[in-house]
Image 1 (cartoon, helix red, strand yellow):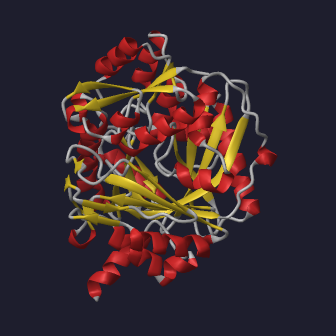
Image 2 (cartoon, rainbow, N blue to C red):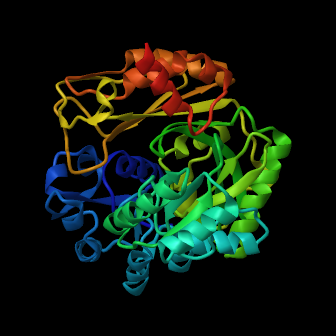
Length: 451
């Protein structure tokens, strides 16, 4: 096992990794921007190095500065967390060339799955069902119109190198398709440095179901059940839960087998997530694969009893996965609410600023993953996520009741957060029944505007 690692990230995920490392006796090195000098991950790490100014390009995306910090502190490995460089194959290659272990999959895995079109083609060859659409990047509007006509409207334009809803547009006719094509390309170029887009058939009101997987260097592959991530706004997840109310044992087995078939076909190593869209008839389609730890990994940890960061570290260090598929049992139910520094009452407007007062919830079945504290300054330079509130119960109803109680206890001022949104969600009759889809939040907000 490693004796010292560097964490190439910030915020709650950096702190999350530090905690597991401390339990495992691994020393940690934090890197930070000038804006994050007072962040908790800097305080709790064994060592910390400033790598640049506030802008991500000058700090958390600054590969030379991160590698220099790793070499100065003589670490054996780097954990990228999620976001920033976590799915950058070039960074993984540089780590390898510097004889530093990248705690994640191989550069080849990252590159292949990071190209959404290549990932679709690869998974289709492996036997997974994909959503009908273009096989290559769309070159011009004539080709876009031809594809749309062949699969039928509505269609969705997606960035080939994308994620998080960037470079994504839903089109219902030729006019919106042509007008959206250039916009999607520009957005993709701005966010990913790659303007390539492709077109898929748009599935109406699906569920977003993802399968957590683990794989080691010795050909051992596991899936850890599903997470339902259907509660989204503008393709950004707001709430995740495990298990899904619509996934029974038979469907779980089929989803898990499909995910494992896909990762075996590319000799995948490390933790990862295979994402599917599930329609009303329980047909599921491969959507994409994330080659990193997910924001929502805690719900899987709660229902399986596993520490996914620990598993990542062990796999990267060359250990074998000791568990077998029959050892994985989902017990109870877990829900995660993403608490963002956004004003729900004002169209989710970002709300950076200083926290004067903070009360975090607690009690049985409540977990808070957060890097904030009274006096902490929420920076406008980074993602607005300030906390992940996770509850666990013997069943979904109990997990929801605990979440409602915990949200009422959560107090932060004067910063506006998404806590009020989640409180309303916990009282929504359709959500309580589990009658949700990726359109749910959009329809919920429309209904509230009518009142």
